[in-house]
Length: 222
Length: 222
View 1 (cartoon, rainbow over the protein chains, first blue to last red):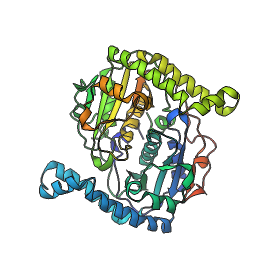
View 2 (cartoon, each protein chain N blue to C red):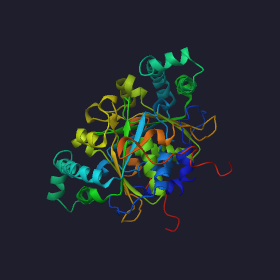
View 3 (cartoon, each protein chain N blue to C red):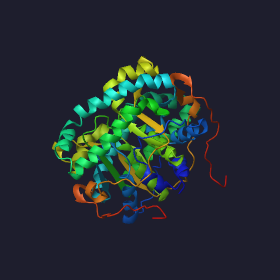
View 4 (cartoon, rainbow over the protein chains, first blue to last red):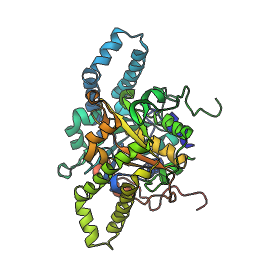
């Protein structure tokens, strides 16, 4: 797959089929992930793949409760606004994300594979995400949809670490949870706030110097 | 560029030429970056491009001091070990990173472009990194070397934010600093700890189930 196609079409794909992901595909995904740079090339990372159905059944209620808590905390204002003004464009966008996230919460136990990335000794905490996003992009090229979420760590961190057998004393930080599976939907170019609305040049608030009305990449056949 | 080539060959490329990066190339890099997913599709991000020579001259001593502090703090143990046992493989690897990082510290003012990503309202702090890594991968496809570093924020955050004009009251977090320029060296597949040494399956410490001796991607002509 061409790089720009992967960058433009790898969105959060939460709705997936239960079909298993072959080991060779998993190997290609992780071998690509570990090529990413890390701070000082320290590679203080671990990648835990979870496909044991019993373990996933035990994680599912923790994930569902985390999503329930998410709507009542971080997104409370947006949930209220979306319910009061469901016809606003912002509400429609938020409700679509909410439905998709709720689908994953309700079907967590059917997802074939999860990737739990961990980092250690990283003051910024950001050093592992190039590897995680590389895994998600490689998955895209393999036809696999993924979604990175932080809610398990935020709301049920200790129970999750215990279920995964992460040693207490070594200071490993769970850097999210990535769901993986063959998607039920189709790959699209994501709609986003345009570059000139979220970019500056040389000083906060200064125009970046270019405006982009339509995505710079489109499917060759479009 | 093919996705796997980008994932396997985008390393930290700190040594770059001063040649400017055309605006159209910058636009392709940022338009690809904003297609990445973010937590809840909130897109609470800003991307500040810096190419003003005076401003970069003012940032340069802050960056150099940050790197000086880095060797005496986070990496003190490794600096000492590498100097005591310079022939160890681990020392050689660390000293290579140190030389490269020191090069950037000494030549910061000659780098043609920097990208400063910012996030807001993100409890995990990780939500912006897919977009940042997408920018770095798109840069790779454009022939531009990049390096993501957290040291300016860690050691000279307030001064850096002031020079960039970031408003105090809005809670923006600087999520690193990415140097960008046409590299002086060549693109290579990075040597990393093999997947089976950094991956587990279903429980911390359990074998992941596959071992990979050589990178799964290689240049077609190799």
